[in-house]
Length: 252
Figure 1 (tube, rainbow, N blue to C red):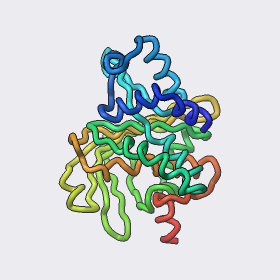
Figure 2: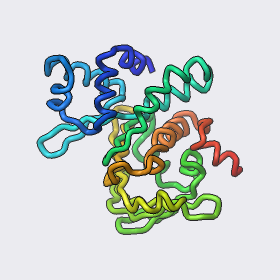
Figure 3: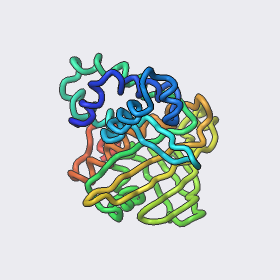
Figure 4: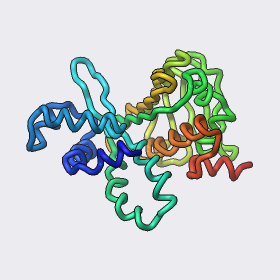
């Protein structure tokens, strides 16, 4: 959390986050053209934002694109806002709006102290996933080409196909939300889970793409909460007190 607070304390770095809010997935050159500083200066600030986990970079051909990552802000919210709600709420409200941008691609990154095998199990095991994924009962054989579905309250809420399955490293799925007519009309998008071992921990990157420009934010807005709950479950064995986990507790 110290890295996140330090990164957010600088007005230039906040400006970079604002630029990524306005248009996610920008190159270094695009960001340099929008800020009154040298290319080296932009690179330096981007590096600090990446180290804090607030920005995630991904290669696209010869280009390196930068994406706003909402997960550290979700963790900050869970650690502080829930404890000191009123004093912090106003300060974070503007940043919250920035994290609700609608783009064609959303990228979320989180580090979890666990093994790739245990993380893969938490993503694919029905009972473990229920504890942090809004109580959804997700079932599948998790074989390439197989179907998966998520059921909540006895009703189908999302479904799709496992496009690529490479345990415990990579899972690519089509995603179709059906919990309401508004999200059902958005059609099918894609979710990619990528696990990389880093020392005694794992780097998990979830990319939700193939979204319609201006797509309903319900499709991707819950990811920071889900991933925060996943991290808490694997590192502490406890259930995070957010709607993503409390819905499972309520069902118990």
